[in-house]
Length: 405
Ligand code: ADP
Image (tube, rainbow, N blue to C red):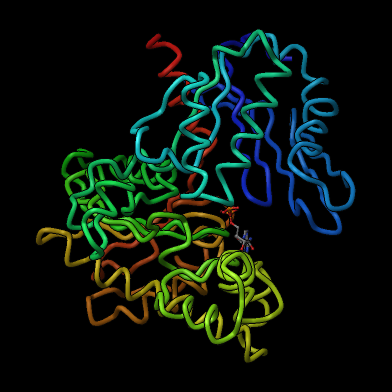
């Protein structure tokens, strides 16, 4: 065991159908433990984790919920790490939605828990899962109860201009009920934007970039002079790009049609748009991009789904270029798909050739598996793959908040 273990942060990212966790040192970026629970609520729920260079994989059970998976992590994984655990100085929780009141990362107390609860209707798939994680950790580790920090996806979007965050509905819905665009994935967009400023050797304050976070959830942000000026996710993480199981943008009248003409209830429609749409809905087969990459050339439904995904993405990139005040420093691809699927980057950039994007096919193919670098020709507008690390970003933020107190 490393004798220099100190100042470690436990990061917990309870997603809607997965749980990511890690223990790391936010200063030297060393990861001591990292793990992932996949396929919650499905027929087989798995956990994989890495510790001291060894990877473990186990089936937890069938139709496992967040509570059971978290108890498994605590009892079977963390309990084996006593040396690491006694050096923990805090716990960072990813929270998707801060609602109307919370603007930045903060230590968790009862009031913050209530604010996260109040924002459940703005992130119905995510905030409840985030709350389960917070409650279980506080209960199981009372000595760390005052060292739990909530890091919000929405913080990054607090300085967006109202031209971007307001919907064109009666103004009172914003004033009275907080209906506006809040954005999500902010931790990742912020992290890769800072990485890009280092890669480009540019001050963050003068950075003009478009960041595309493409994972199970997908979103895009326009960052001008280091400030996020627009983003694709809205009141909830449902708006915007095509996602694994979420529809992204649609005509709101589709909801009225489904309700009035097809007699579907509001709850059924919510489930369809959040859990049965996107790549899964279009293909009828899968939401996992590995399936689409394999079948793009041979299965019609796979090609159709991927083409729609790229069509929407390229439209957003083109429109966000208009927000760049005369200069675009780079477009960034990140997230599980953005970092690992050259096909998506090629198809998207080929639709943008009118704007001067020219992909370098060899570089593009080489940028996978966590590698970061440029994927365009030297005469092109620059496009980079920049690997995200939300766990590290959350750990660093948590450490800053704890040391401020
Ligand atoms: P999230 O954090 O939103 O759960 P991730 O950023 O982990 O999502 O991305 C998950 C997506 O990335 C899935 O669609 C998965 O299939 C895809 N993905 C991850 N790795 C690869 C890979 N090596 N090749 C193709 N697709 C991948």
